[in-house]
Length: 252
Image 1 (spheres, rainbow, N blue to C red):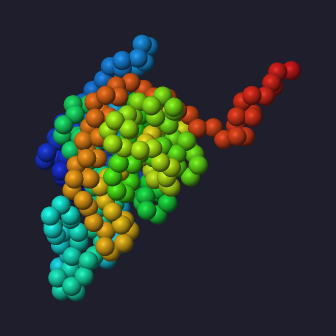
Image 2 (tube, rainbow, N blue to C red; image 1 turned 90 degrees about the vertical axis):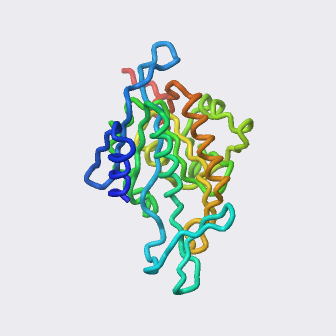
């Protein structure tokens, strides 16, 4: 997947620069920082994130992607069985690449080892995000979901949640489990993050499948966010202990 992404960028989006760290995480930047609509706010980038690894590691030699109507699934003809599609999170990669082609200024972080406990994002080069306005991660099952609280930890400000425009776009705010935006938040990214549906269903299983209208709907929503949200949305997570320390009077 690292080779695929880098080769795709070189062939289809040559104006984008791509750097890789020692873990295999990819840091992609296209264009110059855009002016913020907020007075006093520094220029920056809308930012997307996704991951390259998948749970399914064994495929038959004749593994193929099949389509029936609006559904994509993995199939082995020799074994007569469904095999994991890996749409978690190849659908997210596809959304990110489509947005890189469309938008003149954008950053994308593509991680390794998300399925092993967010190994890549836990070790991400955080300086990459210093001029990010926010981070949108298309890596959630199904359709119409936006997750801004993961494992009970808020990853976004109330201002950002309101600006997501979920209801008018057919999406709903839900709580979620671990994805890459959680370690980014815990590691002090300093901006709001959200995880959105990417059109895949039954993830991590052999009968995983993608519903094409769901995927296209998620792409349209992400493009809508990148078009509308044009300034920085600060968010800093602090533990209860940090909050107590910060409120203490330590003067002598």
